[in-house]
Amino acid sequence: MTSTPEESGFVPVLGVRLYVERYGTGTAGTLLAVHGGPGVDHRHLRTLADLAPHGIRVVLYDQAGCGRSDRPRSRRSLTFQRAIEELEALRKALRLGPVHLLGYSYGAAVAVESTLRSPRSVRSLILSSPFLWTPEYYLGWKRLVAALPPAAHAYITRKDPRLGDSESARWRDGYAEFFRRHEFRGAVVPFDLAQCLAGLQPGVHRPVLRSMAQFEGPGRPWDVGSRLARLRCPCLVTVGRHDKMTPSFGRALTRKIRGARLQIFEQSGHHANWEERAAFQKAILEFLSSHR
Image 1 (cartoon, rainbow, N blue to C red):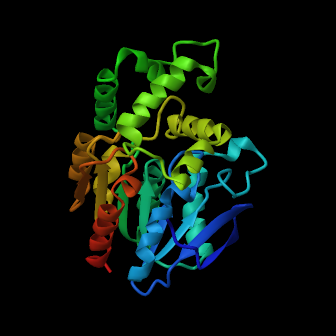
Image 2 (image 1 turned 180 degrees about the vertical axis):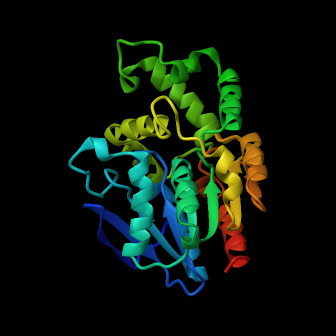
């Protein structure tokens, strides 16, 4: 179970209202969390409310077009660039000052780019199961795909052009196998996580990924690998042992960031915050306590 937020509501940011939940008093600092996707919402991060009794103020929000937040009038404005600007604009609108910033999965990409642009806004950085386009990420992904049973390859290859992904039995079967191995390895998916994943918005997911693929110019995708050495704040990288963001990728990423630490959760896939909830909370608390 998760706590009830002390505050929840809508905050105007870049022409839309973003839904925000706040937990705790913040006597030991503020943790601002960026959810994954793109196209899901903050509910997969509600376990972070576990930190509130320890003096951490936890701030969760839905990115534009996700969850309870407004969708911009033009779908063209749903871009990776917007998500980066939105994060810093929200921090300013809430008057949070410098924060401990946590990015989960795709949210890590937003958090890294935002930190590089506004380093004084970030006291420390936590990249949980980070989705960052680097050669090491692609290599790890290929190894996971190669190890899947043949029937599950439909999830990756999508070989039936006549059917949408969600309508193809081969896609559903392949996704179920991949999910069991690398997303969530528990017997029962927790309610908040299940509802969050079921609420994926293709109208956000696709345009944001397209914008990432053209971020540096036509045919030039977003590439942060060479700039990770510029990060100067304390950094913790977390991955699950069975994560689709593989431990080998986590180790390579940690080597690129000066002074970064790596935490591997041995029983987890992509959602260690649910799969090893107590261990995840302990690791985050220890890191935050050392960087107040």
